[in-house]
Figure (cartoon, rainbow, N blue to C red):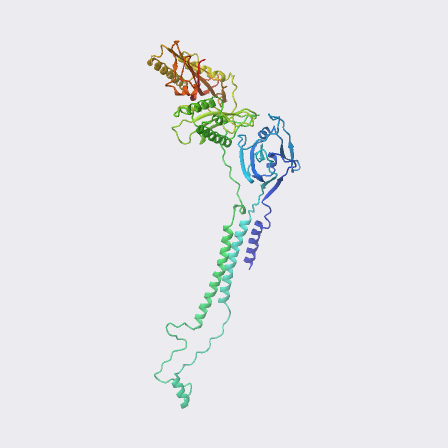
Length: 618
């Protein structure tokens, strides 16, 4: 009975810890506003008012949009409109106030801007009429709650934080209680057996019964007066009462005791099975919260290759954010390529990259086999180097692979976000050279700085690099800048020179060199260079070149025909000209430029060449 009492107390205490004494599982705070606005910003301090992950639950009519972003970025995105801001007071209570715009909208009117699709967000969630979002918002990150930019933001918003409901002694208490329960049952069974085996003195067994006689003999003795206890008639055989025939159950007292001994065992077994079942159920339903937890072993973290400098600004994008942007860029350009839609391509391209695609679309409408620029893959970002900059414009450099296809060269590209309300646009993109190796760049979590275009601390100033390499293309080893470039860059320059020589020879073979002239010239493109600094004080510099070909007649009676040049015909809309044509090929180049004074040479990392324009000489 003591074991049963202990089992009941222990098991009951363990169950009570997980039920009536457990308490609430989370703490809740309602986000309320007095004046509805299209946008509501929940400050980082409110989200981090309690430890643990945050759960945001919102209800409303129609679309519900939730985005996470750096607080400064959110303020910049909302600087031209009014919004509700939820802050945390010193008393721990939340309050809402309307923040008025600090920047005048371009049209002087209240904006109705849909927040969905912006590249500024670190993460986004969308729901219809209701939304529940579990987050782990770090310091300095706030949350935007909105609808579609036109309707008011949902007013029914609740924040929840989990409370520690672990009861580390509930499991051990229930297990020990189960052990005492089993022990009590075993002791109970043993007590019953002991009681049955030791019942004290028993009554003496009755004397043996007299031998029975056959009925006919007994009747005859009664008639003749024979005494009842006379010996039996000779020749008759009677069995004692204790004997029994085969197949008949024994009727002795020993057999009865054997049956009575079996019944207690059966009862004990029937009582033991439910107890075992209860204990097993208790053990099966256990969760980690009801067991003592040891201190977690520290997880080794990768050693940072570069320390954060004082005053270091945040990187423009995170890795997850960059992957989402790349997916959007890839999908947009794939649709633009399919429909030859230059306007759609312009939403994600700029500069030389946009001009190349515009030209390709124009030619493709007339020349079905004209090759479009390389597609932008969304499979894998191998290297990401965001600019560490809190303002705008912001630039990101990335190296992207085409999945597992090693036959397709990876692409290196730069993309820029001009202001908080614009999406990133790719301005330069080129295919990596087979033997190229990028210099050591800052990790994505740290970001890198842009090198000024006129920086004197590089082997070549970024804004002069394109002109210097153009001189190498035009003059070869006679250029004063020839020795500044490595063999990869010189090999590319030689390939351009060979292409020019091939065209000159084709003109001679057609006997057209006497009536026309073909000249070539390379020059720096109109796009400004983009220079991202490397760890070793060097930089990756993206520049553009214009490689022009001018053909014009040298005789008054001669004309330049475009019969064998369908691309030029598609772009100019004419078949021939008496003045000639100028064809310009845009060349996008990425160089690794070492620091000033280094023994290393300028290395060509990637190159891409596309027809940019064909115009008739006026």
